[in-house]
Length: 368
Image (tube, rainbow, N blue to C red; front, side, top):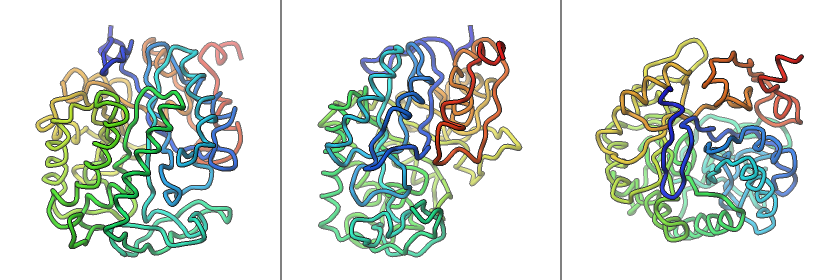
């Protein structure tokens, strides 16, 4: 049996295999950022007995969205929609973690309450686009958060986590990667603050650690996780010493004894994953020196490379993204060596059931 298909315990949860569905922004929520039946069908298709799904980036604060169609948990009205999703996953014997995020400067005024400016650690203009009713549009230049506003954001995340309990999730993951707000605080290319949230590694990681501890207060440490993208450059992100920065963050998270640390590969060396290669993982290998708990590695993995990183001990689980989009039964396909459906990139973001819930299962493909 491959290591990918051996059991593992995450806190109070027992998993039957280590093939994780990565958090994937699909932008199919209904009006009010509320998940509907289509989203529930999508997640149910990809649920497996004893398997772990990490839900897509979910807006934790009213000013935190960067994509029209993204789901939220900043309002009590969104709880019931997510309950449709979690019930559907649990009915298949699966587990699902909520992923909370705030887009920060990766947003446009069309997505902000009252048409306001997006918020960020510092008022630094950058490239990038947001998705609005006008389609993909340039991000609006952000304003710097006032120091006294940050405590309110911590409370927004805590309240969203409380709603996640009510919605039936099995745990919660903080999205601190991909150039969103936590990442903007961590990396000095986007954080030029001179207060207690800027400058030193300790100060730049303060917001993330404050939110992590707030969520532990709601969920308990073994149901809280963090996702990092060491040296991630998407969204015009940069840091003067990413290896030291993210090593420091991992050391600070280690004593919290979290459910897991989720790492995007490959990022430490400045590589960007693409379809033309299967690059060697580097982030998990570095972070393993500083973080002794469970690690999920994500980014460009195939069956053999996933097996290799597990056997090397640099990660304990592997998250798959695009292949899970196209293959709702991915764990069984990997277990049996069955061929994979090709994914349709143009339908990744927004739309209907096309490219969302219409990918065939292996047995359906054989019968076609």
